[in-house]
Image (tube, rainbow, N blue to C red; front, side, top):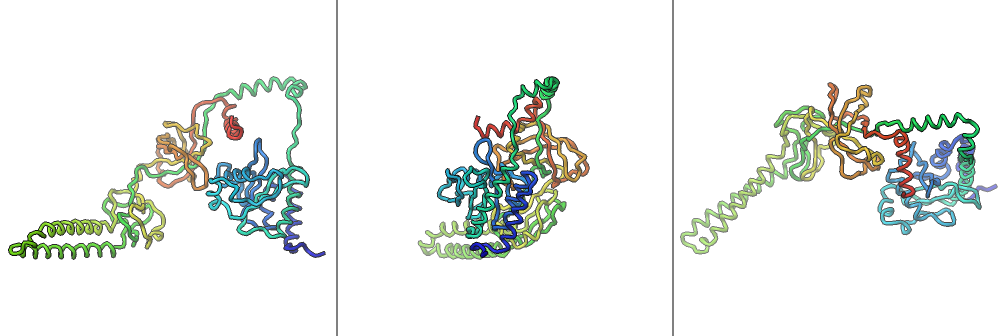
Length: 446
């Protein structure tokens, strides 16, 4: 029998293998991995995401090429909002359209996803979808790939429905009536849940310099050479960076020549002023021009003297590979390196917005460094950013600054680890249910 248009034997072989993996998946985690990753063998795409029903609406439960989904990430937020805006009422497959999206979704799209997005319902024909498969690619799927997505959509929908947990509706009173000791156990658990404990949160942290000197470009130019090595101790007045001086030196020489010309013109005007009224009238202009040229020359000389950037104080030069700077153009004020005092240190912590209730000055903190995990260092929160910002992983975090109250011989700038921030005392039940309650309020709105 002839193959379907656009479907070759390799695709069919991959289809049978992926279908077998989906049907033999032992749990939902394995099945979700197969759906978003193994499907690439059948029809190519840049990335895929699985969208499943939540308490209200739909949420991402799996993304290709990553182990877990960051619900606070930019990609997850964009996919869920775009899906909610364009999901068809008849539960049919659709292509994501820019015209049907909001202003924020249209602006974020080029940064998080390729231009072609197809969303396929997973489920049996005639039934409501149990999930949706989000496929993003640079080019539209061909006819063969579209037919295979329809087939796999039924397979995946059947597998998801088979692995969904079955709820049993039994009242608490019926279970307690069979075993009286459950009442005693419930009382004990209730008392345990009232046990007061400290709120705490873990966040990535790094030891950074406190109040470092910024070595920046004094003017537009090109870095000729970095004269020190990264993390090298430097003395006050030691040269750090040499900038290309061709343009600056030329400006100084031109300013010097212009000053000499202005002085010559002033001298000529003074000599002619004895017999020429017009020359006497031009004396003030000539003197003003000489003053202007002197200022220009002085400024050019000042810029020439700053071609070599020197250390204002002793410390450690903090920057990346010096080869990255050689020959690189810089703008006025662009930071090249930091000059830090190794004895003046602080801790920078990136705290997730979910733990914002712990943010308070003077809160205690412990720093567990990756290099010394068994030797925590005590500290105290001294400053918290006014509003959260997006970090390198597209997550919203608060930038928290802490001061170390403990000292170790091996502490140095650049060490990384995990900070544990401790808050006020709360009942154990609140500690356990704090995140679920916050998630429920964000979802329901009450």
